[in-house]
Image (cartoon, rainbow, N blue to C red; front, side, top):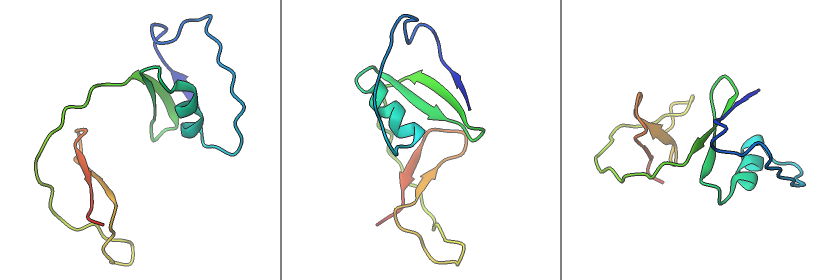
Length: 93
């Protein structure tokens, strides 16, 4: 894994020490970065990127379709993202 971030986000002399057990990388960073306005993104290539949290503007619209499992059964609670955007939704529960 490689970690990328801007030195503007985290001062070089800033040290954070936490004792965590049996957590994912995402969970560990969520604890360490809580309240900082910084969040972790993990890419498909397992690159870790620290970014400033952006203010989310609520968008409205309708996404329709059916998400199916490998067995062809409908999946409830699946996350759906519109390719090339940050727009998404969860399927009906």
